[in-house]
Length: 87
Image (cartoon, rainbow, N blue to C red; front, side):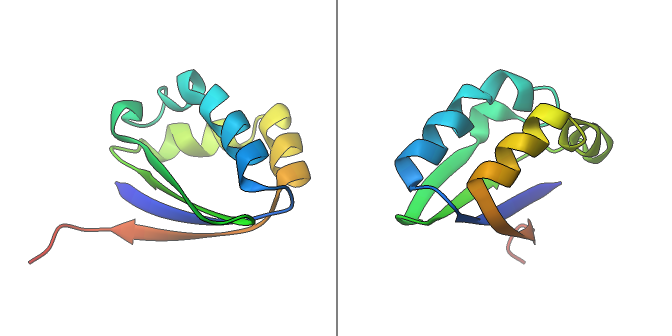
């Protein structure tokens, strides 16, 4: 599964992306981290493209209390979109 995630940020993008990038090794447990793309929409919004996601492992990772604390502190909302190849 491949997804795009749009995050509304409580902090500025530079602060958020520093933390996001520091969690790269953890993400590699449930997605193809070598293909991950992250971008700045504006100072309070980021978009992330994640590829080759193992859905079950991702949900397990999202239950991590440390990750939940970081998300609560830095992200006010997220929208996830499934990506599919063009027809």
